[in-house]
Length: 395
Image (tube, rainbow, N blue to C red):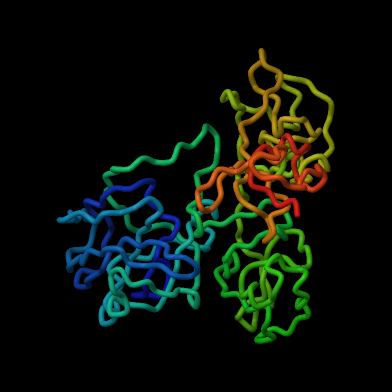
């Protein structure tokens, strides 16, 4: 925990990689006569989280401790660790971790939900709304001994870690105008002001057509980018001293279109697992120079050796390889299985089953249903044939 003394600290980035059990807690104690609770938390949608299980850690001598749990606490993939206290235990048992103080690199700090809530406020299995509380950056202070029983989703070589649906939503473009997630805090943890409110900050960002939600009410206080700010989604804050700030929204590791020229993910190896050569390097393979404007980053140094498609090759993102015997290869970048707007006109995924479980008919077929949806320009695919029997919205 970084601040707030005996406040609750939920380490939302300290997630379990698969289903399993917590069998022990490992921590460093500073105060001998204080009780502390270590808990397993689960994201419950929106700004809600729920305490799944907790362990009361009794007073003990200062120093390093491992506390066995009997019976073990069952967890599911994406669950995370939290620390909280009883309200009358005002001296924290666990010493402060590092924060944004220049001692630890920013990349080594993790998001922690920080709230003046106590054991008396929590009931196992009952969701709590944390919308009013801050997310800070800090190092983690507690470790779980964990036995996995489930299967971790496969991670292809060189990809970024899978995101937990709902908690870590993402953007598909640098501007992120399409972002419709529910993050409502800035990158420094400040709570966002509602877009349909003029308090505490008066503003003129009130044209519903500038928001993917189409109404200011539905945009709520979520991070958005109605005016195309260059670093992506942002919001006005609820702190009078800070008018607005950017939000910390990560990139989605998928492509929106077949060509994937917009792809800005983190893959650095090809479909056959060959490492990519840097785009600003001519070794081991010399190649025509590329302009920074050919890449979504607009900067060759920032592109590094990531899979990209600067020249619009038909099969999507690719790279030159570091294997002298192989000049270039395509990367295994999947199409995003999601829509970028409510109508989903640009959706190019491969779902071919209705929400009721019925198999879709091919768009280039008139059987068993005759229809007039056969104009190629109404589909995001090259042809109606390419649209196959995938879910589309040509109307």
